[in-house]
Length: 215
Image 1 (tube, rainbow, N blue to C red):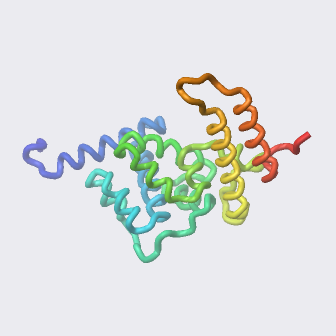
Image 2: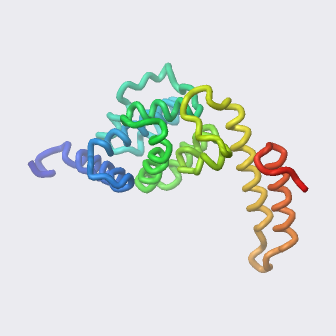
Image 3: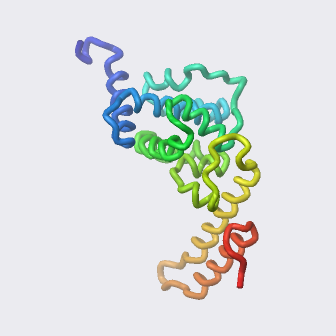
């Protein structure tokens, strides 16, 4: 049945395009795996958003995937705990993989969807999540964030407050570096400003125990 005789055909076609984008991003020809990964991402992120934010996110989805997005959703029960281990546990269970396998997969699905959503929409959603989850969803190397310890994938492996403290410190350090390296268009780089910014970033990391002590 062609598009001109099937009113649902355009929605199905668009949903298949999104699924193909996810499948391509995770380098698989298994559409069922791609669908599980996409569905897991939608549900796991959805459950950590408030009702209004979830509605804004769903509005970006093709009609068919919007139904998937709201499947099993209970508005009175959101947002659920927003720590990394519980996020990974839910995502892994829904995708049928281990929490360790979920760590890189989450970021890959995010990248695929970022190219499909309206510009800035995904950034708006991520801004409403805790820093730790934003890093995870953006595919940041969490092993570097957590230091020499493995990325916590089970509840209780690392206190959420400690995670937030570390990630906030890293964010502040990067911000200090960026500000220090900025210079007017009509002027050249300020070597002294860059050195001062590096010192400030180092002090932030030292204060939080994220690098070696000053010598």
